[in-house]
Image (tube, rainbow, N blue to C red; front, side, top):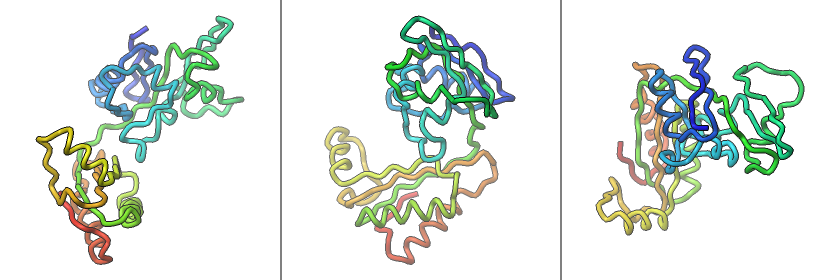
Length: 223
């Protein structure tokens, strides 16, 4: 139960059996010029069926949502042995109850997922990242609000770390060197991406950082 059953690069869908490793799903999508956006630290070992059963998130939730937002259809074995066939890749389906959501995040309590149809996305053609530091969590959240207003759905990731988390990273990975003051109370790693090759993502970053600096919200930044 670890096969990729179907890839539709035109309809942007992929059907995989539950035992498929997440990385295999990602690489298959990439080979067809598409992106499967759920990214986890365990992507080299976790399985797509487990991702569905736990509604796994990952680093791209802000832009793409959790696994639930990627699932178009499911094939499920019920507790009495019957097979529920909801393995449809149709995006616009307003017929009856949307039963697949009962199984997504259900951790196998209502049935065992055996196959899943997921949506694929266009691959980003450009990306830009920045490491930002702040004195308060409120300032960091103001930064997120600014990015949402200016960059919109180009925000591919926005990870907030406090001082305890930063020190844990430095203690366990001695070779890591932060690009700014490691004693900053809060840090944010932000990534922008766009499918348009000429998108000026660096300009968007500069616009946001200029606004934060003018309001004395930003402690330091590295692009």
